[in-house]
Image (tube, rainbow, N blue to C red):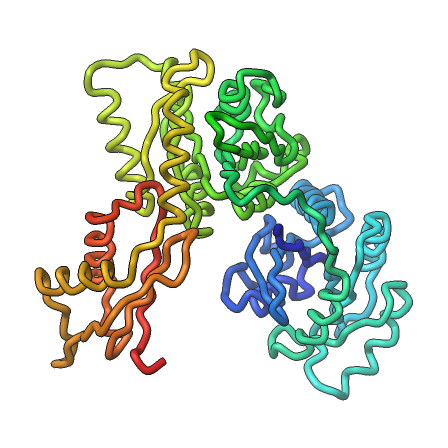
Amino acid sequence: MTKPVVAIVGRPNVGKSTIFNRIVGERVSIVEDIPGVTRDRIYSSGEWLNKDFNLIDTGGIEITDEPLLTQMRQQAELAIQEADVIIFIVNGREGITSADEEVAKILFRSKKPIVLGVNKIDNPEMREQLYEFYSLGMGDPVAISGSHGLGLGDLLDEVLKHFPDREEVVYDEETIRVSLIGRPNVGKSSLVNSLLGEDRVIVSSIAGTTRDAIDTPFTLDDQQYVLIDTAGMRKRGKVFESTEKYSVLRALKAIERSDVVLVVLNAEEGILEQDKKIAGYAHEAGRAVVIVVNKWDAITKDDKTLQTFEKKIRDHFLFLSYAPILFVSAHSKQRLNTILPMVNEAAENHSLRVPTNVLNDLIMDAVAMNPTPTDKGKRLRINYATQVAIKPPTFVIFVNEPELLHFSYERFLENRIRATFEFKGTPIKIIPRKKND
């Protein structure tokens, strides 16, 4: 199920980024005591009382025609559009300002559930300052201190009360859900149309035509699929242009709902930094991945062009070493018939289970070939291993001391597992655990 979306909104310098970092549990947003330092929306995942959600940190809303702040207001308004619940942050030390009142007007127009957090209430004596914020008409204000982490539990309790009960389309367990992600104008919608053999998705040369994720179910050779086309993801700094009404979060939602993700590249433009960031979303989500290089018919080729391009992809996408690469053309239908068979293989590997006895024989053979490392005279001892999950395949290895399983040896074990079972198209996870845990 798609996670609810929570947006943190407020004028500049009220502590939104500090609160964002507290909720997600890591320093993601840049925090600096200068108004306007958060210049784009930043996304992360949060969890409270076993409820997962996506969290958006926004640049402050400020009512002015200054270009940067106007752009920040636009992005905050876009975050409001995407959100299921809005956390409105104000500064308890400064009281209500005219900018707070203007932000409140914007939020009222959204008709979204709003939780009012009064930040910088660092001690109980300051709670009297809450009362004036009732005049904003946002209900009971919640006293919080982002810098000290106070009151955030109360704030999130209120947020959870407003989470929607989603009714989403439930597909058959055998249905393979496939999303297409990539920068705008790489040809995702054209690929959908070409795969389906009909114009089910609007195709345009104007970047950003696809405004939301579009589900297209179909069946081929008795296999059921759902293709999820998504809005192209722009690099930061462009994602908030007025023509870009929908955001990266739409694609992140599509990835969450997918079994296999097609990362679409543009052969004409080559590999850009944003391509790696986009692919990283799918990898981090643990989805099966197939890299699809579109518009392959549009470039001049010789006998080394394909190998050269493939090497560039491998060099740039080191974290996707398991992902197969396909060179296709939606326009000329070149090699389109290779996509769905590869999707089938990746989906099958994504759900593959390895018998425990076979896995342990493999691990013991690997240790005999390359003995476990030592650290300060202490040697890593592997007791046994078992697979605990699929999508992606996840293996727990019980050891004497988890910290002795260095990254390099973990990678060696992964390579040995892949040498036997391949797991083409899917990431795999290895989790060290102390034997008595």
